[in-house]
Amino acid sequence: MNRDGLAAWMEGNEGILHTHLPLIVEGLEWVAAIIVLLSILLMLIGAVRFVVGCVTAEAARDGAVRVETMNRERIELGRYILAGLELLIVSDIIHTALSFALTDLLFLGLLVLIRSAISYFLDREIRDIREELAR
Image 1 (cartoon, rainbow, N blue to C red):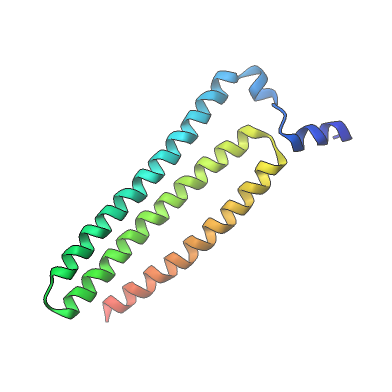
Image 2 (image 1 turned 90 degrees about the vertical axis):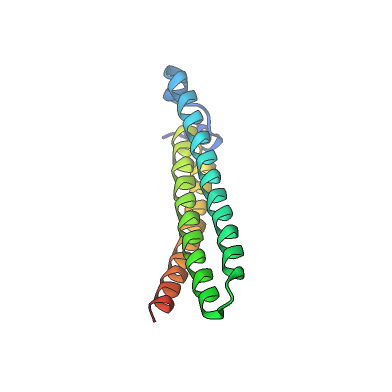
């Protein structure tokens, strides 16, 4: 790749997909946007279920039942968040594959790294809560 080709790649100039298959590119951009919306919807459903579960847990008179119910709700919320993060990564990969820009590739790497760290620690917390509930 010569110097001008590298500069064009770093700036994100459109490639062969954009030139010869613009309808497919536009369709994939819509797919990525829909995946983002589904991810947000999934996390919102998890948040609503969590709030309902917390209200239910607070209604329990027995403290042990309240703690157990709260921990189960935290596990469920964690599952929804993890699923939402995985969908967001799919959307970011589609967007990056279409952009042909080095900055987008670096941004994707950073996003995947951050989301993977969040997923790792959230998964670890869920495992700890499950172990606590098993006792």
